Length: 128
Image 1 (cartoon, one colour):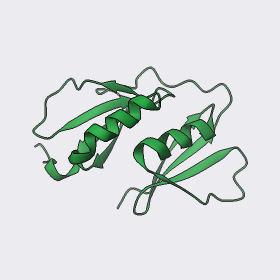
Image 2 (tube, helix red, strand yellow):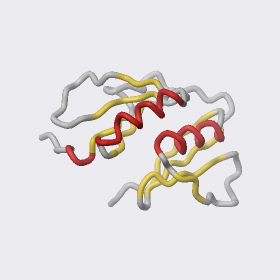
Image 3 (cartoon, rainbow, N blue to C red):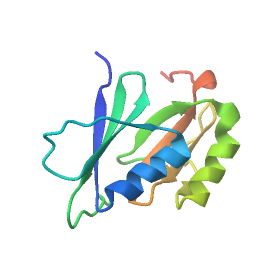
Image 4 (tube, rainbow, N blue to C red):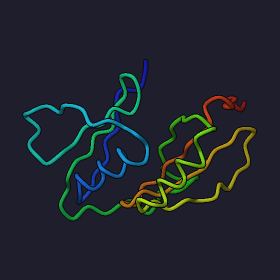
């Protein structure tokens, strides 16, 4: 099996899609015409997508944390400085990791409150 997509809710579809396009470089792709609500689809990797759905009154979970719910993505570690700057410039909040790892990584909270972990792909070693 492989990862297909994850779906997040937001009050601001265009703002959320724009945030990820500007910071992570994820590209907007065609979404099904029969989607009955405001939505955007982004390609985050080959065959992997982020679906952003507009939900009136949406509130993020209070469990968004390193040791709670978060989404982890790989990115080249050599681009971390630029990525962190883009995240901060676009309203993301950088978060210090609680647990040390043998590979570089960092966390950020997007403007909705979701927490993402960015892992240096070339350094990643599965811990056992």
